[in-house]
Length: 103
Image (cartoon, rainbow, N blue to C red):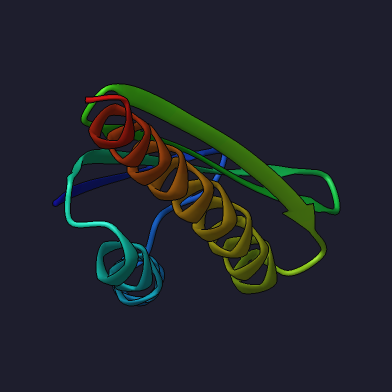
């Protein structure tokens, strides 16, 4: 899994990059077919925003979150993406099971 971290109006420090990498490892535990992750960290006045696009086999998943603290915004982002990845995985498993039952 390749993670690209970029910043808009904020310098992405090594500690931020490591924090993003450690949090996104959780997604890979749930679903092995993650191809690419692009994370954008943005600062707008007092609002810290984190958004991400994940490329999976057969799907793209997008989520964003805002908070007063950048690390909290990253945590919320990973929680949202985790739910979406699990839902995508269950959908794939349901389709495979339906195909086997039809035969």
